[in-house]
Image (cartoon, rainbow over all chains, first blue to last red; front, side, top):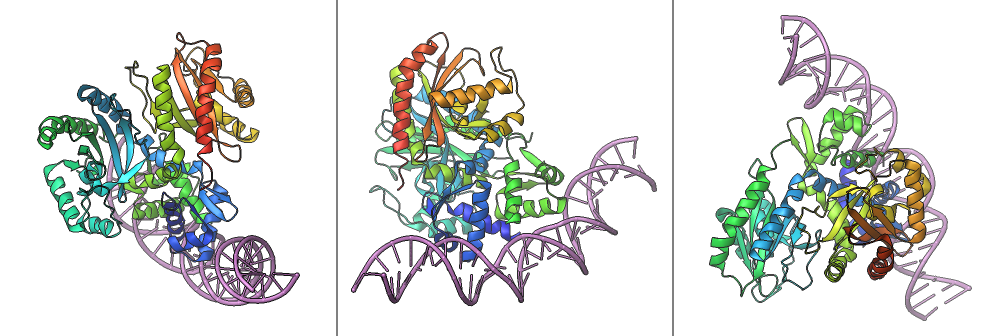
Length: 247
Length: 247
DNA sequence: GCCGTCTTGTTCGATATTCGAACGAGCGTT
DNA sequence: AACGCTCGTTCGAATATCGAACAAGACGGC
């Protein structure tokens, strides 16, 4: 259904990079004719998924129906939080779960260590997938072409002096992390931040999300992460994978 | 665009009540012919928003693009968490933010009091809007017809002996709460749980979400909630409203 | 105020897409 | 094997969508 695909392309074009769009912008970004874009936006507005203010369109609160519909069907998210909370309490570190979305991760569960007083990102927040352990633990499950497609579309920024900015190096990292079954990322996104993540697999062996533990690099060595934290996270990931059994 | 509307109707039919659907179920639930439903599902599957396992369809992780797109455009969510955390620490109570979605609320931010050790619901989790302060603080901003539509479609359950099950009484409560600018709900959903919520308004004076504080009914009287907690929450709601200024 | 430029809104015959009834295939039950 | 149910396929008919052209609206410069 061509028309449906066009509509979804416009709906998907809204996001952090295009929080609002005019008719012409929507047409260009979604690669539609102006007339088609107009029809789409009119329909989306009439259905309540998009708001119009003058010539500017933006997503309406009703559009969350879809996103949270997925989460509400994923019982593992409800199960993840207490598991992450328990681990966070025992190790006094912050734990999270996130899913992959394009070239970003989206947090779906977060537990912050009690000693952390600084600002933390909320659930629903996004971070660059290729430079976070949560992303790198999942990206390797895509096929090579898809990884490259996302890499080539990436506008790579050096967040810290340690950020990997070479796409070939990133590809290699993603592949290596897939092989070893976890990912450790050191200060690539934020100075001082070291994190380890483990993918959550579904019945087909595909990654549907990942769980992680993050800490300050002065508190833990990479070896300690692998030896001490990895088994804990793996245990949680396995429990969550098991809860994905068909209902 | 009729076709787009049909597609979105099927996509919106997935959720907690219909986690998976067969072709026939989707056609019935979305009120489409079987052929139309089949075309929709085929397109949604081809685009990656829906997964197919035999004759059973379910939402795929990719469908979160839309829901989280909305959140990612709402900077107030990022700003809410530290504010709620601060309040939670000072008062040693749990705080949350939620948006309204049909007859449910969806948590978008949650901060649990340190003394709480029991299981809490994760962000993305849903609760009945008409029986929670977070819902009741927002419902009054809908027009009467819409409130009634949601009430009539509601399957009301007596969660506790205090649950209001009469739709007229619920309507009156919603209206009263709108007038007073906050909502206090006492043990209607869970024994012992008392909560107060304040709506977050956008530039047009419409509620886009609400923030709340919940406690045990033995710790706080309703008067204390109104006198002590309401001004704090109102302050937070106002700060978040102010951060909604057009960019 | 006038003019030029750009974006949006409307129109309508042409075209593409969608439609669904009918049939066949596959599966499970008796 | 027969039956009932759901799904997959087909194809002429019906309908929805199309976009080029024109008009309207908004804005900035002179």
